[in-house]
Every structure is written in C-alpha cells, then in structure tokens.
Amino acid sequence: MDLERVLDRAVAIAQEAGELVARDFPMGAMDQVGFKGSVNPVTATDAAAERLIRKRLRDAYPRHRILAEEGGGDAWREPGPPIWLVDPLDGTNNFAHGFPQVGVSLALVQEQQPVLGIVHDPLRGETFTAAEGSGANLDGQPIHVTEVDDLADAFLATGFPYDRRTARDNNVQRLDHFVRRSQGVRRAGAAVLDLCYVACGRFDGFWEIRLHPWDVAAGVLIVREAGGCATDFTGTPDCVSGRQIVASNGCIHGQMLQVIAEGADAPLPEPMEGE
Image (cartoon, rainbow, N blue to C red; front, side, top):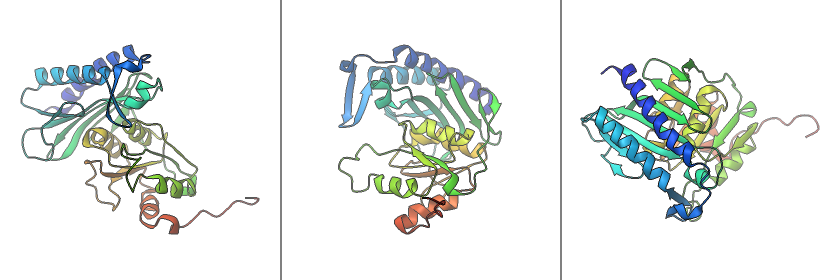
C-alpha cells in the first residue's frame, strides 16, 4: 500500500467533511441536538459528516473496514484488512454550544497499530497528518514536540469522561494533582486536538480516561511521529483503545506517570520565593 497516496486521499476526505462542519457552525438552534447520555450530545452534523466520510472511504477503499463513532462498524482489534477509525466531529458539546474547538479525525490501522493519522480543524483551517515512519506535519510543514523536561514547567491538557456525574473515577482528582505540579492545565473538550497540540508543541503533555479508539488513534500516531510518547497509565504503548492515555513530549513522561501512580504523594515543585 502506498501510504503517502492514501494519506493524500484521506486528507481530502477529512477536509471535505470539515467544510460541512464549518458550514453548520455555530449551531444556533439546540433543537438540532440529541443526546446519547446526559452530557453526551450528538448533532445532525455529526451524522452528515460521518455519512460523507464513510461513502468516500467505501468508494476509494472497498476492501477496507470502518469503525466510526456514530454508526459503529467492525471491531478494530479483530484480524482482517486495514480498518479506518473515524471521528466525524470530535468536540460535539463544543460545537453544539458554539465553542470553536472541534476536529475531524481519521486513522488507518493495521494489526492494531495506526499507520496513518489525519486530524483536521475546520474552524482554524489546520490539518495535522502523520504516516508511519515519515514524521508528522501541520499543513505540510514538519512539527515536533517540545523539549520541556520538568513537569513544573509543563503546560498540560486533559478531559473528563461522559459518565463523570456518576463514575467514582471522573479524573477530577488527577486534575488536582497535576494542577499543583505543572505550569497549568487546560480542558478544551476535543481530545483529537489536544493530542495534536502536544505534537506541535502547544502542550507538553496530555492525559485522559475512557476515551475510544476513534478519539485517539490518529493523534497517537501524530504525537509519536513528532518525537513524543503515548502510553497507557502503566507506560505500556498499547493505548489505542483510549481507556487510559498519557501523551507527552517524552521528556516529562515518567514524571506524568509518577503523578498518576502516586497521586497526592507525588513530589511537589519547590515553591518560589514569596509563595
């Protein structure tokens, strides 16, 4: 398979879907929004963008399998032909409320590992891409993670699971632990962009729980190809399920894993004079 040619086609598909998303933003009318859970909305735009992506992929690669957020599909871990993991609109809650932080994500996975990743931000017109072994790019220009090597100097991102109202572990305690040990933490509501921002140096690290493969597969590859690291909470590289994920510039990865493992017992930065 010519990955570069497939990548070019997938970029065009993601950008076409992005045009649809951008056309519908901001929603303006909440009656276009349904709910899969109390804080998990779905819009007509999600469905329309996914239909477009599915059709384009089916036409271009009829033997490939597809797993997408809204319509489901093949089991991505089962052996078989390559499978596309598709999130047609990551950040639906943002989209539904007119908050401009959303992304279209496509990843091509072979033998449970992403080999192509495309994340398109339709509202900023930015497209992040990676092909296995070829580095990562933003709008065709190479990107690389930061070299920040102390968690106390790191700028981080995270998110909260959709069952956060009822789940015993809703990531809030980890947020407290990291806020006390970093330069700051942001929660912008689109994991696919958080991962890409690690890759291009806007963030130094990211962690989250109970995501899905379509949320992280493209971003994991983009981070790794940009020189970063992506693992689960134990440091195992098998994080494409999204159940647990830590992505970083690599330099602070061990420190992030330590905070996750030790919580309030993890080392705190030395306070500056006057603090």
